[in-house]
Length: 99
Image (cartoon, rainbow, N blue to C red; front, side):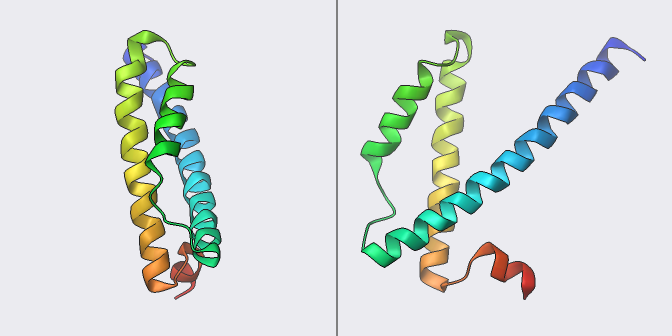
């Protein structure tokens, strides 16, 4: 096996972990949306988003910090889009799978 093949296998393994974590994060985000709906709280919370980025940016090396910030902002965007869909449709991802 070439070094490139081994590196690609490592990336494939990391991607599998990221998929599992992404799904877990989105499911938790969905639960947050339902909580927010029940309590009349807005989906958008820029202060919390800024705090998360600020806190977590200190945990990542400077080399990757800018990429991390963009990644996290996009993740917020996806999460909020799904939360808004759940609130508008009253449909969770689990319900969509069963339909």
